[in-house]
Length: 333
Length: 149
Image 1: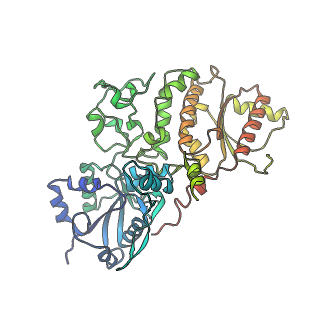
Image 2: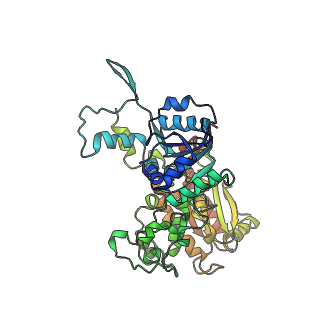
Image 3: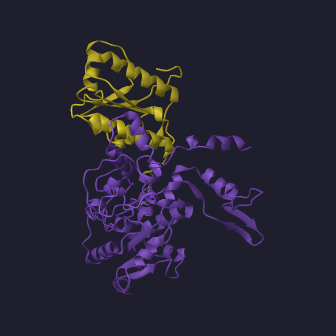
């Protein structure tokens, strides 16, 4: 057997973008293949779960795990790979903070199922058929993973050594992580790697002056001044509350930061920090005018917690208070 | 204390210059008011980050009171205006999380208004008693527990 360290990559509730980000290393991917023995990577190579189950405990040196924990299968694989890996890395926003899938935490599971299988305009389902976890067919019983009530992060499910934020992680930062693993120069367990300590503003090229805003606008409503901080122009840019490391790719093309790199060092709740900053920018001392200006922030939770809702202080919305929920409960026989 | 026997736990972030001193005055004046607000002295209501409020609610508080100097009276000139702005954005955030916005209250109580402080506490205690327990731990149940290693 080779002496190379063993690398595993896995995806749970994710879109596949993190896998593409690894491939975005371009020709350096060959160096990764030279440096590591890739023992599990379902997206690129033919391995099965039973191959992982057959491995000795702690025989994988590094496992890059992307995707949130949404189903019983995600949870099983997270626990299995934890058992088999020396170093488990929460790779990408979904794994680290819940990511886009965790916005489902603003709804109930039942609400989502009814929306998808009954209410959506493209659905025809007069018999009200819902997916089942177990179903009997002539050939035997077939099984689907159970969909959980809420979306969780990888560190909320198993212990994790490192966190690599980003939707998707910047290939340059992935390369930093690969080099750190190869050289053994890894920081203490529990650290965020492949990102910086300062916020995105530190990397952003826009001129930043005083932040005073009379009106908030959405990106499609204005053509921004390309020399000036987007937030100062009233566009909700999460750069102020987001960890840097991405290279400020979004603001480089005049689009606001959406916060995928998660909270800055030492911050518990990225969304609260962002909303705090946004509110204090409001240029008024009149209560009625303040309320009017803040109406421009149309979806505070969806904006400020877009990528880190599962890891936030509140984690999810309270189900019985969700609009329509009571009506649905009453309608149910 | 409400009819249903539920004693809410309310965290109070009180500005050091006005409301905390007002609370002291309520005490030295021997004004009776419910014991449900747990006061935390902050230098300014503008120091109250929304994450303080969310953490209090997530960790078991049923309500949060933020109280500072009257508009125009802030020791740091405009800290209470920042509190006011954050409060209004926080209210819409709480609603999206399914938390009744009445659970979090912002008031202005000066150092000379011990009686007003007592009535503010009575008010929020009654409101939160009416709403019942928040019990956020049961909402986000099991998060951060039962990990495999």
